[in-house]
Length: 125
Image 1 (cartoon, rainbow, N blue to C red):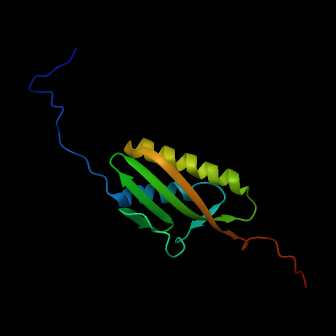
Image 2 (cartoon, rainbow, N blue to C red):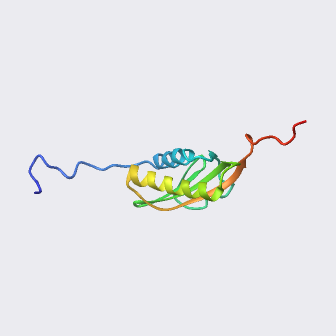
Image 3 (cartoon, rainbow, N blue to C red):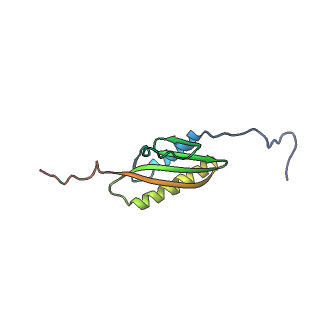
């Protein structure tokens, strides 16, 4: 039964989510995926879309109630690149949908480099 009396108010105001919040969600979620070492700045000229917000390793586009995300990642040397990329896409989409309730149009993952810093050395001289 719906109560439209004085104690029930459906119009409590608006909620605005800053694009930086979405960037932070994308960054932290991507970094939480095993195999992701860090995010990195996209190559020069990659911010080619209008109305985009950028953060370290993230280019974000917001259109009404939907989001497009572009992630630029560095992965560890010992992972399946395709599996890690898919996991990042799934996890970031889920995090944005669950935390802010926005539709995710697409998540593009760009692997910019592979980190071999922790790889076993082959020159045992």
